[in-house]
Structures are given as structure tokens and as C-alpha cells.
Image 1: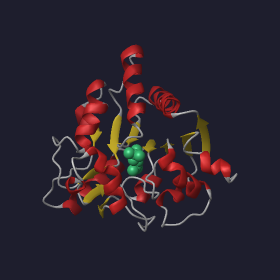
Image 2: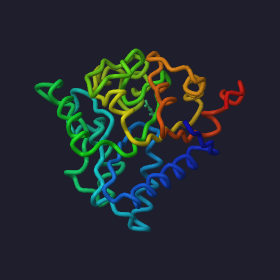
Image 3: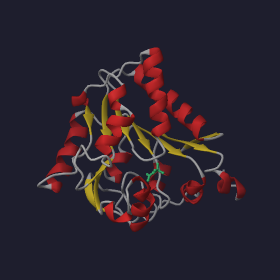
Length: 247
Ligand code: PGA
């Protein structure tokens, strides 16, 4: 796992955007895995700026998002469908039919999981997956204890995750209790992974990730084995790692 340290959130966003743009330019048919949450918003802003200024084209790019809350419609302002449209898709020349996010409203969630997994395989797999990291080490919504062999599946969200995400809702009660997420194996099979971390709330997660111990109790730890994983993290996120000199 390689690691690039940057000064702050803005620099992390810029570096990550440059990395993605480079991949898009080199592979017009890129299959790009996307994340939601606070971390990648700045990256998406930079991708939009670049698209407006330099006309980088997303016409043949396919995207696959990590996850979606169960029980929220696509139109719900807290759904990840809504997040992606607002924060990225509607500002690029990406085709609607080329953007993929699991549906959170299904009669049969298990069937939706199987369908999503097949979609990724039929597209030829993900070339570059963007990841944030939860304070508990989750990637996507794969909470501690999830099998490293998991494929797209239904998860019960950890209370800590619901609390962390409650800032986007009116109250904790409104935060859904379940989600559909790509599994850890699904994520791991991406040809390349770019994990982003910024700020104090990620300090402990960075220590655990970079300690080198690989355990299902800390889902992101599997990335230590990935042949092409890069972390871009800012000084604040890496503060404790450097304090105890593991980086
Ligand atoms: P955040 O979430 O980007 O909002 O910090 C990351 C995550 O929970 O994976």
C-alpha cells in the first residue's frame, strides 16, 4: 500500500482528482467505483471544475457506487442517488445509464445484491475504486466483523456509523438501520484502489490501517494485501501515525 501525505483537505481533493482525471484520460471506458460521505465531496468539485475548464469527457465512463441506504427512494435528499446526482453526475457529460448505484427500495433486497454484483462483473470489473474510511475501519458499509469474502450484501449499520452520519439527517432516528453495500471481496477485486482520509476523526483509523495487522475486525486492513492500493491522507489524519512512527 502506497501513501501520499498532503497538507489538508483541499490538497487531498486536488491530488485525488488529478489521479482520477489521469485514469479517465488514459482509459475512455474506465469503470470507476465511487464513494459518498463528506470525504469525496471536494474531489467531485475538482472533477466538475476540470470538466468545465478542460472538457475531460465521461461519455463512455461507467460508475459503480459502493452503497445505498435501504428504505430511501432515489429522490430522498439523504439517498446516495441524490448525493451523486447533486454532487457529481448532473455536472458531467456522463450518461445516466452508465451510472450504477444499488437500489434502496426493493421487494427483494437479496436479488438486488445479486444483480448489482453481476452488473460489475459484466462490465469487466472496477478499474479504480475510490474509498473513504469509517472511524471503525469500515469501507463501503462493511462494518467490523464482515467477511473478507463478502460480495454485495445487506448490512445492519453499526450504531457508531448511524451516529456519524446523523449529521446529514434531522435526527438519529431518521438514519436508516440497513444498507446495501458492495462486499469486501467486491471492493478488493478492483484493479486499483484510492483511499482518502482527512481530519482528526480519521487519526485512529489511520493508525490501525497502517499498523499492518490484517483482521476482519478492521475491514480496511485487507487493503494492506492489495497489489495496487494508494492512500492519500492529510497531515491531520496522519498525525498519530507519525507520532508513534509507523509511517
Ligand atoms: P466520511 O465517511 O467521508 O463522511 O467521513 C467515510 C465513511 O464512512 O466511509
